[in-house]
Length: 76
Image 1: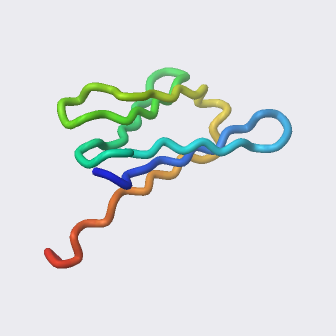
Image 2 (image 1 turned 120 degrees about the horizontal axis):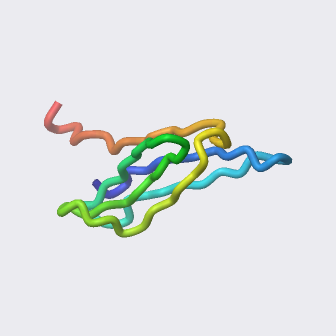
């Protein structure tokens, strides 16, 4: 969904750095996968094709915050 985003805070040894992966177009979403020592954050299309991907070492991640899109307030 457009507006779906994930913020990742990384320990770089000095000051922490913040990265953000955002679903830039309607119909896209952001997915987070974890495997062994790598965390992968991808923006994917409706078909599941990755558009862009960011990979981080899990032992360097200080925070990973997912910001899902709020649902339609009219449907609630």
